[in-house]
Image (cartoon, rainbow, N blue to C red; front, side):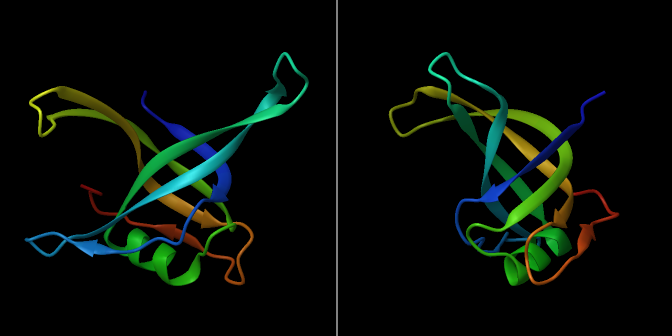
Amino acid sequence: MNQVVLVGRLVENPTVTETENGKKYTYINLAVPRAFKSADGTYETDFIRCVLWNGVAANTSEYCHTGDILGIKGRLQNHKYDDKDNNTKYVTEVIAERVTFLSTNHKKDVTEVKNVE
């Protein structure tokens, strides 16, 4: 089973982009604090890249801003690409299937029922 649940703060305002075939998407980075302290006694934070598609992307972009707390439910996806120097790069990201606005002025649960890709 490939399922991810995250709660964290939005690092920057989301911006929706449209593909050539009309699908909307946005990338967001979520600052997710770890549940345990490091060796020096501090809580560290992971910055996790998430991809939102179509209605989920549009609603999140409209209602959420830097610093808002979001809940994300989705799945992990890996892909690779070749950079301009022909080096193979690997990317792991969360494909968000549901976004819940936890600390915005709009308490809303955004779900895209269709395939999110």
